Image: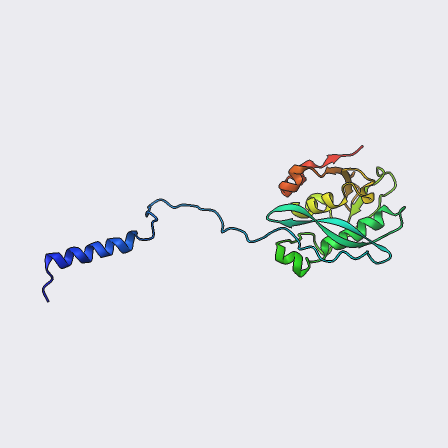
Amino acid sequence: MRVTPAARAVALTAGLAVLTGCGIRGTAVPVDAGSAPSRATCVVRPGAQSPPPEGSLRMSVQLLCTSQLLPVTRLVASPSPDDPAGLARALLEELKRQPSPVENEAGFSTEVPQRLTVSGPRPGDPAGTLRLNTAPEQLPPSALAQVVCTYAGTAAADGRSTVALGGPDDERPKGYACTEETRAHPEAVRSGGVPLP
């Protein structure tokens, strides 16, 4: 079958239209357009706020969402007011608990290991020290940031914004501050530990 020059020109024009119809110009250079947009809202839909059950109170714990720390309200067992380590344990249990379906849908997660435990100060530790069963610098940075920013400002940290944390050995505890930088970039917490006297 013989193809006329006019038919060939029509076919070539149609082919070019198909190739250029998407409006995106081809390139020989690899382009990194970044990751796909996140669908995480980082907002937990509020439910009916009934009074907390007796023996518990509402407190914020810091969870991860889009690689930053954000507060989520949880019901925490209320320890004795003179038992800061008890509050630290209750908050740590909430950090280790997997996010609820609503929190998960909003994009929240936790990096705090299930094996992590906390206790009060040893003799000779600065007041308000909390001892973890894993050295703080051995925790994933995001997990350490979650712990520090959850404890900061609460009775667990003696109301201070800097949390005194030690590990299971005899090394002196260090002070870890929860700052805006820590919340925005949790990995920065590791370099923020300051030896305490």
